[in-house]
Length: 312
Image 1 (cartoon, rainbow, N blue to C red):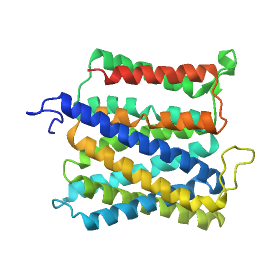
Image 2: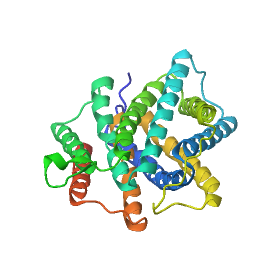
Image 3: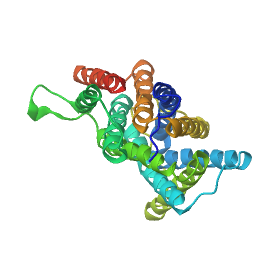
């Protein structure tokens, strides 16, 4: 493996660029999360997931048609890209389901932990290194994530998951971290555009297959709107929301993948995980959601831990 961030330009420049591209992805994905959550509360998470990934795949096919790939792709690159797409299908479905059934602020806070897990996997599987401060930060962030996802009623017996969405968030954060590592592996044998096109097509095919199977099993894939939930959009706006979310997904993936081509995996993955912060702010400020004190404390822990991880 070629060590990213080495060479004549030194280490600081690639690190800074990786942080910027990761933050660009975070902004796109954080905005996408809100739009997708509102749509999924109207028609269900499976249909929204399918719509978003189909729009995303269509964009990448169009981009590839205009900007030709720079090199031939081999079997290793195709295999890694397809695997990335399948992991992505599971990650998006789990996340959008969590956003549908649980408080957006809590679910997003939990999923933000994929940045910390990406750091751990980058060290364990990709041979990247952390300082002792960064390792401590990963630990603090993990504890913060646990506090964000639980409700505490004054005793250990009364401690529980804050929402059914938390279980889906845990699955999503693991899969998102695996997506970061798999993307890094795929980029070793294919260029970014090839990886994005193949992986997104695989994600779209897998998601559409899930939609078809569910339709055959129960005759419908649309889930009833959540009664009493704030932030449910009109059905008229759902197609616009899905197209918007798919477009934001493309922008996030482009920024994320460009970062992985030049900077260490862990710094790009960590910076991109700040996206849920955007989601949480919107959910609390505009959608009427409320966090308990222990969950605020957990979010602060996540922020402190991630800052520590980002220190040189």
